[in-house]
Length: 519
Image (tube, rainbow, N blue to C red; front, side, top):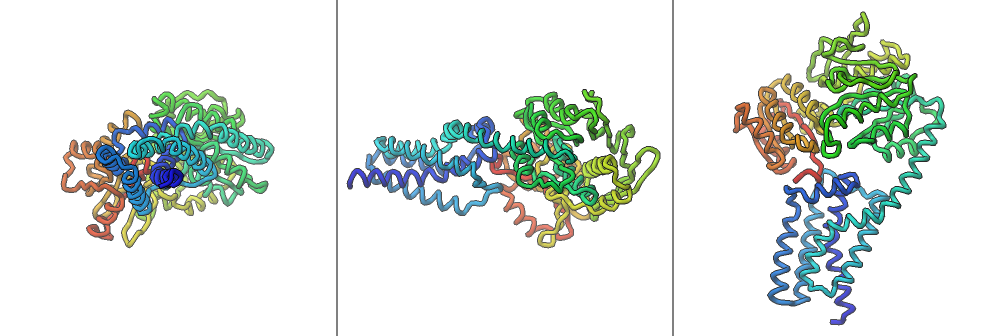
């Protein structure tokens, strides 16, 4: 066989083998926000079992290479394995698949060039060694690719971001509202939009577009001269994020929904989280207004370094400017009174949960600050749309689900269990637990398990290793072990629900689990 044909075979076989692993590496890099630090934590996670097929291949190919020293046999085995993993990849469904954006296309191009160069240079290595190296390098190639594309991505990002800043600065009449919080910011953003949307023509950042690039895209692609209000969700997972976004958007109104232990892997401690989140209020202009949740102990005890107007809301803290009282829940939603000064107003909503009541209070406060009539506010609160995956009541195949599958957190998960506890018939929770909580993750999930006692009748856990701490918490309360079921995948859990449960039962779906954490 000619050397050229051997070289082409090498290239085709080993590039095919690398394809699946490069795709998975890019998928995880994307889910980890294109940050090498986060990607490294995923890659070297001791619980990562994604390499099982690759491990078997590596052992077999090294043994065959050592015993037979046949380049052709090794190529054939590698080709067979490449076909197998391509087939398995085609069959597999991910919670969150790779989104092929323009940025990812550039990354794919660079990785393809790097892998091709490596295989061409490495064709003189023993084929078994090259096969093993291709799998390993598929994951490690993220690092040189990220370094190569970094200047390009930063240049593109900066150009678009500067354009967004200019658009916002030139629109003198645009009312800008910034919303942040450890949890509740997306729900609050949607609630504010539903309440004031009939009063002002409003644009909100879609979905979870709460990063500089997400906000940039919203401004460049969606903001029109007709818009009167821009409601901007601002996310933060490290020190400096909120300050950066506040300097970028420059809102007159700022909201902090809550503060709690999230993203501790990157914030490192609660003091950093508190200071950064409160920048949403401290960086407002002096003629601006800050809206805060006084039921949150971190917010209530924080000394705000700004002389702007502050409007507070609460359920438990009676010193707040707006206080929710006499709350009742049912399958059709919630009703409550709001004390504003010496007056009380009764509200109804389809939303469930204390945190949604708090978020509605913030929406009411903002609407009043903008001059909206209280009767119109009541009507709009009554018509608030359920927020997708946030205590959203839905029917699936006749079963009643409370969908709280977006980014569970310590406070929200307890509120979701409180809502579940009020439901009739059998109460079921399906959860993989909470993630991205740093060193406190096991402790928080153990407390989550303890809190399920008397709130749920059946606990369905997804992921044996991921949910160990929850099971420990359940055991500490004496929760019946026969009422705790563990499945490897969400699909298996749903199959059990449809097979074994009644349509009269209520099932709480608490937290989603992206593939980067599904280990």
